Image (cartoon, chains in turn brown, blue):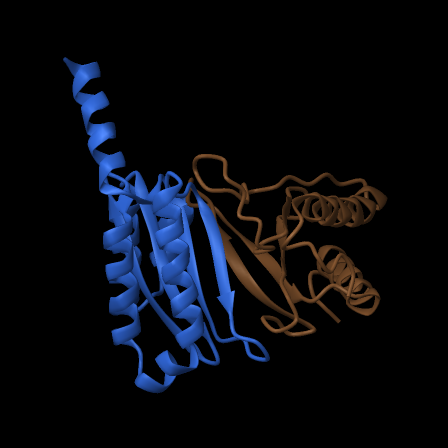
Length: 126
Length: 141
């Protein structure tokens, strides 16, 4: 398991956040897109959730699709699973999102990267 | 709005009602829903109001949703309902929540409980509402 203490150590948690940001950056930049986070993973007073739910969220305007990663501990999550959902924004507009739930390992990292790439480029997960 | 009006065309009576209700509710500043989903289930309880939703009302909606679905579906999501309850309680202690989507998913299944704050604020404590009202009246006065 990678970053195994991410729910106990906030420094590690921030490293994991950057890990997902970098992974996502690589994919979108290769395609000349940009992305933005559509929700702040924190309570109204700024206190971070610090629970990996979600550890990362993104919306890619050019293709109108989003991704949300739920990274939790092994006893709470599947090793790797995903489903599709829709996000409704405050203005009433909606976009489809891929939601990935995982325990982060070298293997699931590769699975997630492939799923995100397929979702963004092909609009489906093969 | 065009998208919403277009989507009314061709829908059945019950669905028309849902869409019209949604349009009416959309005018409210504070909106959201709590859903029980996955494994073929689609059930929700929503709110749309002028003031932020209190944690107490949020917990009430969560309980109503749990009663709305079958005992088997509720039992399947027992842990997820419990987590959602804890999350609402925690939110009330730290100023509530802004637009957000939180998923409590069951392991090895797509059964889940989701909380969506679509606009405004939710799960604030009653004290926060009082402070907000105080400031609104003070600004108007």
